[in-house]
Image (cartoon, rainbow, N blue to C red; front, side, top):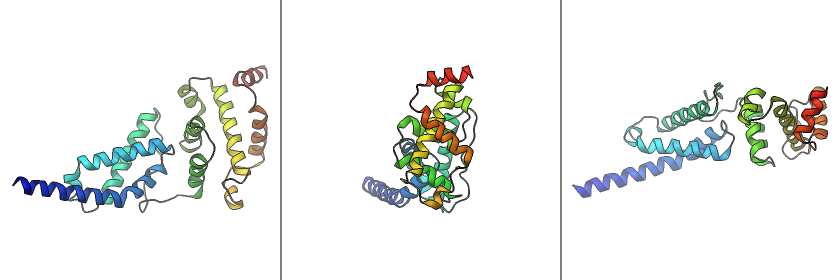
Length: 210
């Protein structure tokens, strides 16, 4: 009897391993399109797999195992959003055949953040402001700084992102058209290049004098 139990456990282990091997890439793509920070996306993936392991008795009998895993990941993303924001603004995660891109801009954002020379803090700011819709006052509180300083940091970030875009490191001509590059935005980018060399306090002082 003990031998039979051991064999059943081994069979379950092999089946679970096979299921995860077949679905891990799908899960990770689903998560990383909604959580841009690589380490956080990996954390959510691991938590999803842990839940799948704990609920294996339920999962192994499920008629749509991939769907079960996707729904678990969806729940973990929602949980992540609740923990990282007081004012919830969920990233859309419905309606996909495993992965569905609403447009090319989300992919562009992902490419900029994950494949180019933004440091850890700038990646975090980019995700919060441009992707997840945080407001300046919210970000100022999170970074324990004034709203004016936060505006300066966002403007600097715009300049860095613009440099990546217009140096041709990421986009072709068609993709560049999807970026907000009207005259007003271009003016802001040019202004930010001048500001980038100034300390935050100096810029804040100059703004207050105006």
